[in-house]
Length: 173
Image 1: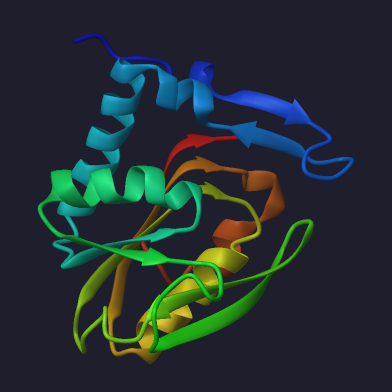
Image 2: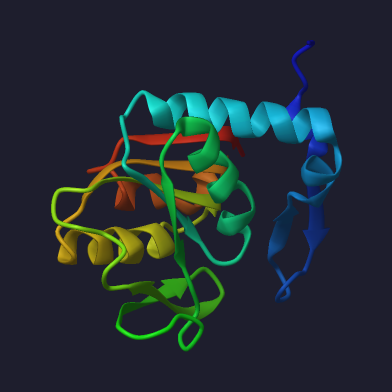
């Protein structure tokens, strides 16, 4: 199998979701079966080396690859959802985005004390999402053993916010 330039499978949407933001759309990558397989395999290989018990995927696009990464890495999957989407009992965190504020929740029983967790999201921008989720994992007694992304927007400085974590992006802008 030949290696695919995954960057060529990312579409930039100007002024979305707000003026001045250049949204990185992973849909073309998801539409290409070979590119999708390559992305999942590379993220799963990196994750597997960290010996996780769980991969945690952030709503919404972190779900798309997160469950596939977990399956290929041989571990379980935990969704981080928007408030009100998970059955009780949950823990939640609010965080700032580069263009607003958001919140995510975890099922409070999904992560047991000492669980090794890799957090996956599609894009690392400011780092607020993963910083908040990492805090929830640690609050529940889990250990974040790595964070992985399809895309890192290095110009937004999210890596600095997450410097305590082992971090891996497939593509860096």
